[in-house]
Length: 298
Ligand code: IPE
Ligand code: IPE
Ligand code: MG
Ligand code: MG
Ligand code: MG
Image (cartoon, rainbow, N blue to C red; front, side):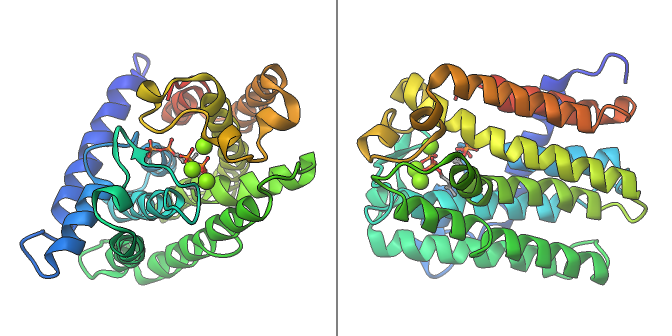
């Protein structure tokens, strides 16, 4: 582990989850053809798969058996893809571009995009509950509970609701933090904690450390997303740059300005890294991932 290469580790897991998703999404040859095609379109061939990496990195720190994290890793990507399909719709952010391709509602239509999100969400839970998933019944229930809370009104969907209600007004720091922690932080936190639960013998210290680590990075992830929206170009992002300003969104850039927002991202990164400082080299994937969250260019 001394010569741990994060890029190599990340690429391996990204390809592995890509293949799992290819195999586990319904075939477009199966009825309903259009819905299945749209589900595959929304999930495959794009996306950094960062949430998946949180699941695998936590599972590896806690020494989960090989294969146990596969269903949760797929599930978190399916929920995330569902959130993006709906986020881009005209009734929400109205964005025509996602992962360098037309958004799902542009490639198909609004009704198909709505159903695609619904079906991706259900598939996520189905894959965890499936008898082929090697997790124990009690691990499955814990993971299903965690993921459903993180997806619902006290998590992603709740954050998206606050986001829509806050359009055109300036949130104070406390409320902005709550919105970001809900809409983006909750799924990242769930991704990491699911990885812990995949390990039958995880320790209290591991759980507590990953809890803090993933909350800090979940928030940092959206702070950086706000910064990139303001700074990067559309081609690099694969989604429309400047969309937050165009839509009058309340973001860390509007609240603090670019320099202070970057300072906050660095601070959150440091707090996340500190939370896992006592672990040995088995935490190196988590350390690399913390760097990726704040150093990414898209
Ligand atoms: C974008 O997430 C949406 C947010 C929650 C900020 P990602 O930047 O992880 O998007 P993909 O999956 O790589 O496309
Ligand atoms: C999205 O936040 C959060 C969710 C999809 C839950 P944004 O609206 O900033 O995400 P992007 O920038 O469109 O990817
Ligand atoms: Mg949005
Ligand atoms: Mg958006
Ligand atoms: Mg954004």
